[in-house]
Image (cartoon, rainbow, N blue to C red; front, side):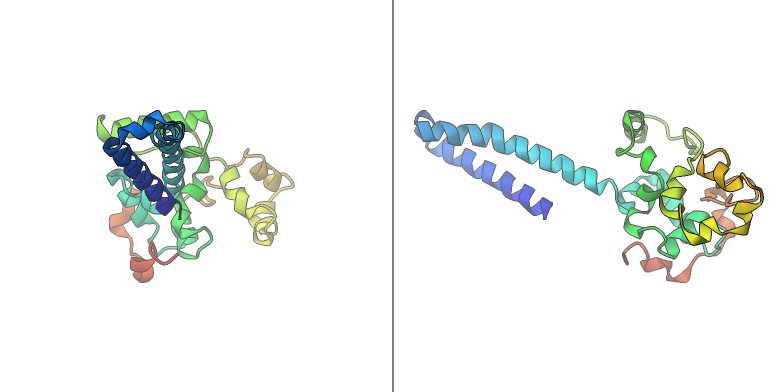
Length: 212
């Protein structure tokens, strides 16, 4: 809907500018001045704002995240037929929305994170189009349990899991981010893109990115 509104505004601006070009004398009248101001300032600024909102919303999509070549294997890893692969398990079983899979688990790493995240995003754009893309992609900082707990906190399967209650402080340590959910021996198989050549893929995954 937003896209159609944006296209409509752009078409209206073009139409008004053409009209003013054909009959410039109208711009000298009171009503014409208002029309000219709207065509040259108000409507273009509105289109710019709406366009920005549309593109920011699109940046949440899995399709957008995987549109860069370096992310291709990360997309493939979501279709690994092995429940030990945490992102694949979540994606295939719809524990996260498939069309916003990357955004859901990496919110603080995106344009919607803090100012530091936005600056990193600009750095990524620079590297994508001008710089040299590294062979290995790494997070800037350790993955925060907050991203897991936004869904799992207070869930019976999380709170009642016997491994989460090995000691009196285990569960609290996970909630306080002192003990990573991805610690060795826990949920420690993530994308593992370097090992994709040795795995099998979910046969139903061919339509998964389209079937939201």
